[in-house]
Length: 516
Image 1: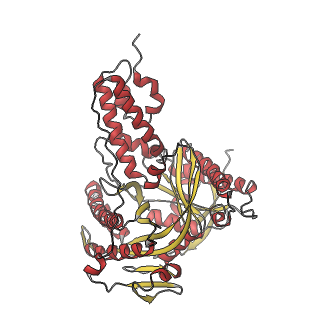
Image 2: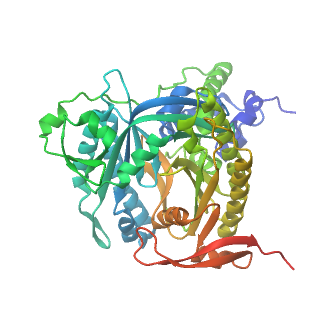
Image 3: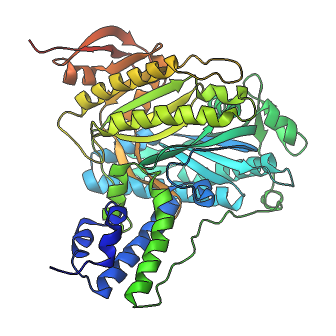
């Protein structure tokens, strides 16, 4: 019988963090070289996960499963990119070469924008497709809105590089819309040790998103509240009622005069300086204590993909045909602003319970709960089936998950807590679509980035969700055709959705057809 390896004593902690071959090699009594290889891999993984998660997660150093809330103040910036669908379509016919070319263009775009954000003292909290949520936290100088506006102007100037992109199908123009609002927001870390999520809640988050929606391409749009804070620092012209567009008439010198406060994302190096097995083991344990909290914020299938590709530090881009689900979870997120002192934790615990059950329903059916993100009402839950792991029946899996999610949210309504002396009405809207998409690591190659799915299929699923009524599940015609032998679907006729040139045939998902 072989002596037990020091690594096998922490096997349960390493199981999901080592590539398959490395995991297999650690059994028995591995050499110090193998232990050093494990340490080297974990050090690389630590850096990748640090880049994959928002700075707040690495700063807080929460234990996986710890639910925490904190009110924060600052200015929020939302961006939206116009022209990506055309850019994707222009490259999709070229297969892997087209995917690499599209990724190169996106990498150039995001690297430029993230650099401006960081140098302006902002933090990229999350990617949502090709959109970004950026936070400029309030400091003693109280200049967060000023820094946000100046960052927005720099970003719009940088967009000139992407005005005419050459593609296999001709010239494509990218344009960006930016919205800025200031206020407070409740940060909440929710979930279980298996799967955590960092969310921003409150009406000011929704107002920031609304400010972007009311903006214009190539412009920086401010809410009334943000405008009042910097009204004497810039010239403005009126936009939509209640919003103000910044007039960029500043010289390069004047724009650059303001203090720039970089927000560092580099992680301290954990270089191994010993070959003693016990010392190596202690270093591995130190790495695990840092890695595990960050890893809990990554969906299990995506984490597995990151682990296996860590040596290359790159996940190849692709053009798959996933099934995308958007769930708008309404009721609990809006309660944040009503919460009396001390009730924030009660709100977060209830949100956490619902999120954990929804994630379990998705995982058990082979899907990926990618993130919980902002919306004009409630919070959006973004779910993938078919990436990174494809199945022959992803549409059926998505339909089954949607019904389970609706039941979870209905049950949450029955058990809704009283927040601010009001019991919230909790419900959902769900949209499911399937079709071509672009999948890649979006962001900086060696900086802030995420595994993401982009394209018109994703955008359409979100718009279908917006069209759904209370606790209604809407599916596209392609999804209906794939599940019609298993689920009843009622036609809703042709529906015009925002951003679509032609009306779409939509269906309401009904009950599962019982076998005779």
